[in-house]
Image (tube, chains in turn red, purple):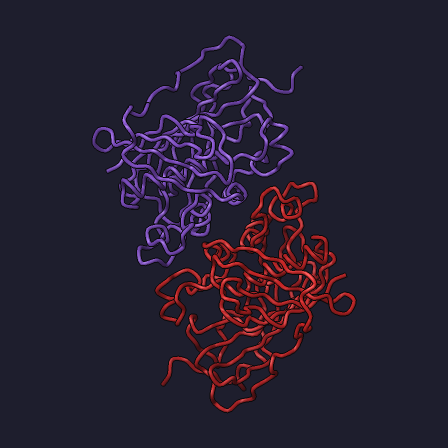
Length: 288
Length: 288
């Protein structure tokens, strides 16, 4: 009997709810540094996200909300896999209101689909995060790709070709070099998968060296969108979605290309400047 | 009546004891990144300090212990000063045993001296850190310089000329560039003095921009000593002492010059490569 398996009919519909947990200003600033904020410490636009006594208070990067969508640890009846077989597929996040710098929250969600991609499966779950007063803070949809479990002839699911950028050159391009140890910092915000830290584990999983968390590049992209389309005001940032297309390595330069689409909507994609490979594709962001 | 004052006779002898508090593996790794560990994430010597599942476990940088010497928040009867008038003077630390990656500890100590330096005062306190079982982990001696409160004709105290390095060139020199946002990361380990983050506060205190925490440069120096004289083994690192001579700015290159003195003793000093200024002087480290 294989130690890894999926029984889709059992997995779909499983629901979960996290116990209430509290995040603090320290978590907020640590996350912001983890996704590259204030790499120039004199940048007045970035400083408030990492400094709790700034003249602009302590706003929270909108993409911080992805950390709150915990609760699905992969411990779902009907599914067993190796942690190093897990890759992020897509992440959608919408915000009902700016996140406070400290809060006690809980998250509830369920598995809504399992797709057979041949070389692996995609598990989709959707959920909501609320504060202890019951106020809706964020909605989430996340798909995870698990290598090696597909090929059982199940439904393939959507192609993931939505939100293709236009043919024209980007309206805005934002370039930012990640730190060589960016993943070691980002992982302290919660995702301790060793594939992002341990060279031996990364190599066993088929990568030349540890890869950056997909959600870390997502956070860099969110900062670029927030800066160029929301004047760094989280209240103007409504939603973000992107697909994790290829691995990105810490130390590379992340290039975020952005196109203004219809009013209030920006399409984007991210690539590695050094390898000219698209790493985040099909990106869309709603702004006010 | 002045809002800032010191009454030395009242201050000396004041004792304090902190409530028990717990540090976690996350705190240990965050501190290590804060003092520059694993800036090269593939450096096998550094990785264990920031990665809890390394092949060498999760050793704790010896200088992490300086974070445990809390409890003296400056709220001492007989002393009132502005937080931005506070600078670190000297820090001595000795370790009884390697620190565990997680522990609940408490700290007890007392003020042992107040010295009048003319342009300010030096307040010295000494203390010990123990785990909840009562085992001694570390001994501490810390002196703080408070600008603007001196000149009342009190005792000047020691000259601080001990541990002068020999005339010969250093036996080993270790150079390390700090990150421009090093202070923003280091402060998440506890010292939130705005002089290290806020350009306006730093300028009001007479600095062109935020300065790095003295204890952050101290941590960089400790890492250099641990690497070159202890083969990165915290069990071989017995004590460290240094004086904070001049401010150091995040983004500068810290040069640690080290001289093997008598057996088991290393003298060191640190300087800014860009400004050729000694920032940590009179350094001494006991090793096995």
